[in-house]
Length: 120
Image 1 (cartoon, rainbow, N blue to C red):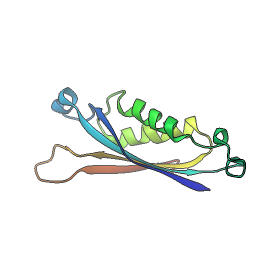
Image 2 (image 1 turned 135 degrees about the vertical axis):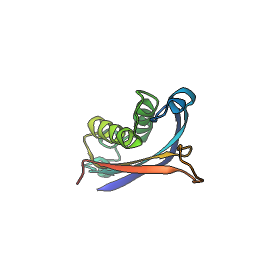
Image 3 (image 1 turned 45 degrees about the vertical axis):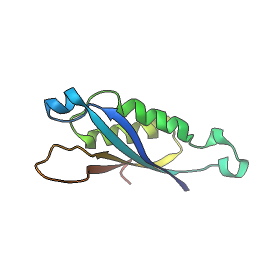
């Protein structure tokens, strides 16, 4: 096994419970930690047998900028499931979604959630 980590992938989207979040939108940040079964790809230095992180970024972008979700937890799960479906060699995907402008009555840097799929 080996691990691919992608940190702070940034996207502008319109997720959230409140109407203002949908209307105005905001930036979301995504981290992906992917545990990968390499098969022979490392021995053969073969990108076709591994997880192409350029495609990973595109899959994350499509989901984050796509259908509106109320919960960033659901959004993280959508990303994890899509990546595992796209790349069967992903043994486990841990997806973190950060929302820096969460509508709370207080000062904070961000709210983040992490979802693992499958839940092993």
